[in-house]
Amino acid sequence: MSVVKFQHIRAVLFDLDGTLVDSAPDLGAAADHMRAVRGLPALPFEHYRPHAGSGARGMLGVAFGMTPDHAGYEALREEFYVRYEATLTERTVVFDQVEDLLEALMQQGLRWGVVTNKARRFSVPLTVAMPLFGSAATIVSGDTTPHTKPHPAPLLEAARQLGLLPAQCLYVGDDARDILAGRSAGMLTVAAHYGYLGPGADVAGWGADAEVHSPLEVLKLLELP
Image (cartoon, rainbow, N blue to C red; front, side, top):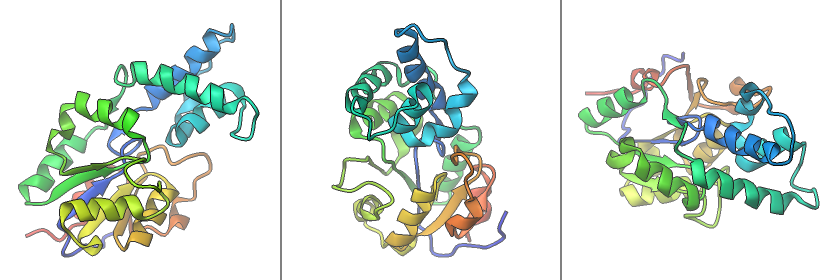
């Protein structure tokens, strides 16, 4: 882990899926249910997990080998959305150490929030159902602004809601688009190795300011009083 110390940080923002919560079991189950109703055999969960960060696109790619340019993709995607929406909190859990990390941040007077590409259709019921998010200072969803990550707009909106400069915010995520969005917004960035990453991810090539292998390592990056 990098030994860099970040100064003047007043808020830590996080990606949601693969960074704060492990939603891969619910995402994979929704896709596999679609296989089952078509008489197809179940796939091992391990096939789905590395693609969880890509949402419907990743899950349908694993389950059916289908890409967004396929003629029937949009109908299948909406079917996936309906199925996932009905079961999105059945198996999803908070990653180990996340609760301790957030508590430690708040004890130090730092605020925290979420910036996710997950649409409000899914992010709101998920975060409402999990007590962890009751202390979040902001939750920016994929459709809160006209753009999704890697565009910086969602991160800039989070900073605006917090009344902070982007340079006062640290962004933690497990995907290259998280790091690109954070850097484009003028924030310091941390790559979370414990997340989904994606097949063949070159984390070192993302250009993050630091990398962590567990949530609590984020604390070691901060210059705290």
